[in-house]
Amino acid sequence: MVEVVDGVDSVVHMAGDPEVGATFQSVYENNILGTYCIYEAARRTGVPQVIFASTNHVTGMYEQEGVYTTPEMPVRPDSHYGASKAYGEALGRYYVDEFGLSVHCLRIGTFQPVESVQNRTSDRILSTWLSHRDMVQMTKRSIEAASVKFGIYYGISNNTRAYWDTENARKEIGYAPEDNAEDYA
Image: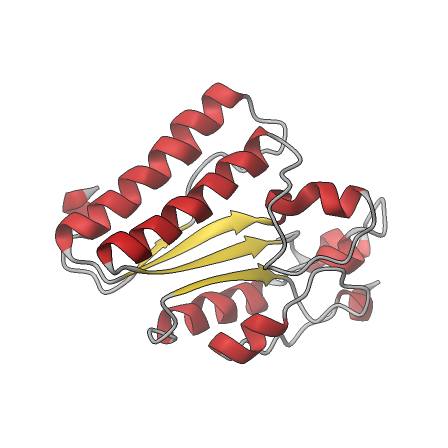
């Protein structure tokens, strides 16, 4: 990873095992160890910023209880996958404090094409959907917000039924989601 990131201004880390039902062994190798390698490579090469693809499953137990969730609430993972991403957020915080990196953690919602909203089998996606356009914007705004040393942001579109708070993303990085799942329901 040192060779891959050497000379870049920002690393956008979207790799790993994205399956909520992934085994511990898989999330250990792909999410825990893989994320460590990214942060460490950034530190060693002087890359100032890492954008980390986290997940809403870091706080998935709140959702199961119907609790409106903000980024500052304690993590409550709903799976090994969610716990592995909580580790990535905590490790990012450590690299900010110890080594001066800038880290933005994007708790990505249901990142699916419009057809997934239109052909949904449940209404959950109407609350959690993140359009491709809004994902690109959130990533771009995170890269451009170099003055924010550390942030955790829910990555969802401007959904009428949202139950994750995006206000800090709007204020801190200028995120202005353009899409709403209701428009495709």
